[in-house]
Amino acid sequence: MTIKIFNPSKLTLRPFFQQLIAHLASHEDVTLRKLKATFPTESQLERQIEDFVQAGLILRADKRYTNHFKVFGDRDFDLTLPATAPKHLVFDHPFFVKEGSELMYRLQRSRIQQSLTNQTNAITLHLSSDFEQTEDNLANYFDHVAQRVPLTPLERQVFALIGDVDPNYALKYMTTFLLKFAKKEVVKQKRPDIFVQTLETYGYLVKNDEASYRTNLTFEDQTVETIVFDDAHDFIAAQIRQVECVASFVKIG
View 1 (tube, rainbow, N blue to C red):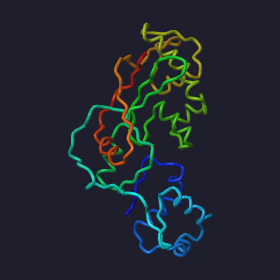
View 2 (cartoon, helix red, strand yellow; view 1 turned 30 degrees about the vertical axis):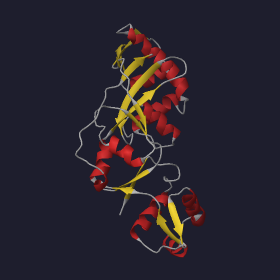
View 3 (cartoon, rainbow, N blue to C red; view 1 turned 90 degrees about the vertical axis):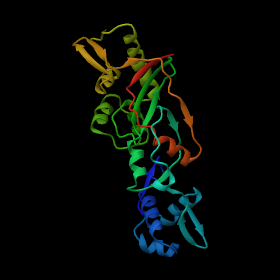
View 4 (cartoon, helix red, strand yellow; view 1 turned 90 degrees about the horizontal axis):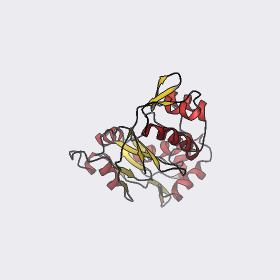
């Protein structure tokens, strides 16, 4: 059985971890000697396995090793339930799903809601993305840079502009500029700085002419409810029902 890891951590992103759990999922009576024979070139194999055991991801009992996590599949959920209103669902731990299952595809097609705030003002930039954050938006850029995720072609353009900038610092200038559109349809900016250029790269701004901009963002007063989960099953059950693509907007206050 091939296992898909969602919400990966630094530990579960290790190539050896993914190889190990795939091996353990299809083999029984696995000892350390057998693992050394199966992965003869793996560096620090014993140390890595110990890391996985201490993290509770791998179980060692009677000198045998097994996966120590639930692998969710289609039978664990009611996949016929209708979509629910968009919410910001939070679950910060890795979870595991059977590769190729309908559940896996439902998760990949589901939507997440993202809110970018800063310490300077009360402006929130609301964005939406696919669950695995493969789409190009500003929230995903900040996450990908922080997590050292390979950047998309567009994100590499943004990185050339603002690099590994502190999100709070960048958003201070971005939201201050966006706030101008609350009162004006067209905002003049003869010499756009790197933050305005970034907003333009993502399509949040469009040039009206050489010295001014319009915005593609709307100003809304809506609030997206946040729900924090402690249980992976409960989170997955709620997440697969999040399918609505919410248009990006700005909230004041």
